[in-house]
Image (cartoon, rainbow, N blue to C red):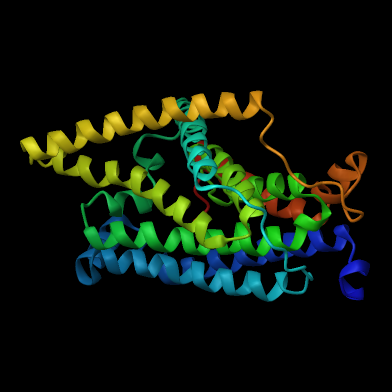
Length: 321
């Protein structure tokens, strides 16, 4: 371990990661506004969709994300990290963790959706733009969401963050990364269930140190979720064929099976105390200092506040622009 790594404090590491998150957030928001502000009105956006297609719109929506990831990396790379080999974790354990992730996130998704239904925002305003475009039944948009979101999000919230702060305590790093991942979605129902996803994917990454495994898990989760968003619009258009009904029934059975298996595996993992992290190194933050060292960093507080403001604004149907 080099001297720079040993002298780099956890306070400074989390401060810089918080700064990277703020920069990514602001740069992505600015780029998105520059691209889409001229088309803020629904009619203008629909005209743009007709010109460049729903797939083109989704590609445009990912341009700010690409810029944000680059900005995040430029700042986060200042924090040194030690290349660490992953411990052995079998395919069976990874599959069980996927089922657990799916089941727990489903519960929190239902909770978040229920809370949103009670908020002052009307139903139309609670629809995610990305979901709207996917729901056109456009296969190009379907593939883009499946492929690009896992790549960008796993690079930032698992690879770049966990590689740099896990040496100060793996459990703390997983929790911090999951909270940031959830808040980053700026939508209550999404924030709740993506927090659960972040915990599971963070744990798998810490154990394997292989971001391609978490990308694949994330991809599979998105496939299961967006499949419903892709199929249902076909029914709304009156295109109800025996094949479509069969697909919907199969998706429903699959969802039920995943949730049941996930709950069973979760109970088993808790009972056997299989969730184990390495928090014994000399660099680990002492338990009594965790909150002030991580969550009282000025940049972390600012990032959390920005995301929470967006979530509350969406719940109360407050539009700033």
